[in-house]
Image (cartoon, rainbow, N blue to C red):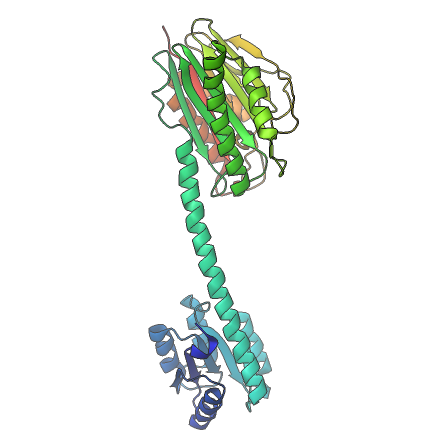
Length: 390
């Protein structure tokens, strides 16, 4: 829409004033004009026809200009219909109030042609720019929603792919439309399941793209190593391969904290490597405890890194919980963190639930209940793996 095609409504209870404004607007090139002689007729016209601009007199019968402006604001139409107040010099305080209510500008009486042209042109140009910004924001929101759905579709949600000896569940709640957390799991060979969880530095689309790249490289690296070397890779070898690839073409200096592990039925062991991530939590007997160990640096920071393998017993009936730091650092409305102690207590409370899904659902529900109405500043991601009893 060009500003000269704008629909302008002139509202004044004095006919001569409306006539003068009509003529001057037409001389300036505005011909899509309407008029109203009182506030009631003006409001009806606004609600029915949605003009681009209303030149609104303050003092009118039936319904004054302030009341009309309040009604337009209450109808949430001020972005669609701009309002410029028409005022006498003695109505300065009233004009200030109108500006506080959302009026774009004011025109003093008597009308100065130069001021009229400048202020109307400025208001309509700003309205056009705001409309374009809204259009672009709407488009971006639609695209981000599609990206969110695509990202969530990338992480595995089929929990029946880890064989009969394991039970797995995972969940991810991005803090923004798209996030930088990742998890993965799959049965590499019968009786051996790989699990991974990670957190990309930063937020938004760059982190999401880095996450997608890391997740694809991770799974492909495990399978290719096994096929080429003829044996299962150690977690440290998987981490080293992934680190080399993520260090390439990484001008943004993004990095990834990551834990990669293999659960083996034959060995009754969980072997893992940890690149700057939170330690795993083992569910065993009647308690839950974090498996504390020295963590290596995150992947993507420095090439030629050497990573370390760690292991612990993982027998029938045991469980394992992996989370990103968004879980333990989740804050409520008062700024209090969820914390490691409550997290471990929730893990312990979930031991009687008997399945990875019920344990994961209980944990996530407890975190979400803690956060309440507070804005989430980080993604919430967890993965639970259980060894089924023999």
